[in-house]
Image (cartoon, rainbow, N blue to C red; front, side):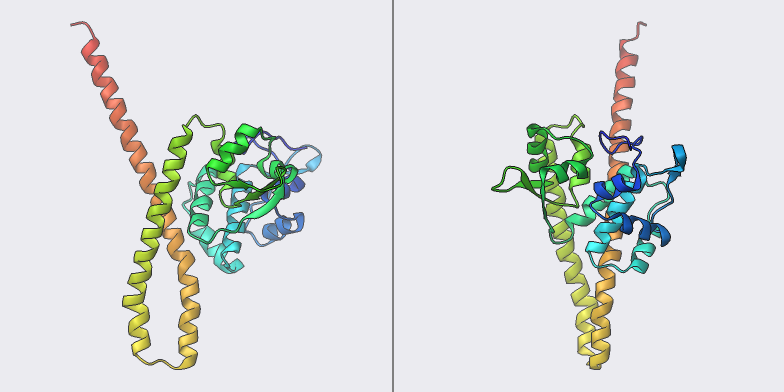
Length: 259
């Protein structure tokens, strides 16, 4: 059996466990593998294929892109454009941010299935924390939950991170506010500089339909560019903040040294 207890770097899952964690079928996992979208597993004892955190997060990102309506060819191009140094956590954050740009698609699942998806048992306190992060909602049935598949994997990771709940809630509000503002501005830009001039050129009906189809392909490209830019900017901001704190500590230590 695979190792459980969170989506850490040392997680090892069989194909059945991987499929259960991602909420897909084993057939789907194998299909993605044959298409080259999912790397092959490592061979464990008795030549059993074992999957790690990178497989799980990549699989969940593929499922999120499928949920957006991307074709397999578009998903392959999308994954190819991801930075080569993307870590499993980067992929989990990327998927959560991509999900925040699309309409919510909650799924109602019983507690047993929720815990399989989480890869761990959940206390009532942890359920409340996931609810506060928006990863799930309670229903009238105390054993059934409405789960946001885009946020649950990242929410499970954050369960063990010592960040105040108020900080998590405020951070989520900031991301949602600015993502909506950016989406509105991009929509205005595209409408004024692309769609409006094209309509005014009086294109043939067939060309108009083709243009509408092209706009469907533009959305995921823009979303990927924005998410990747956000991740890089956040990493730079955090790096600069840590550097400033390190410089301040060094200055303080120098001032305390005896002359």
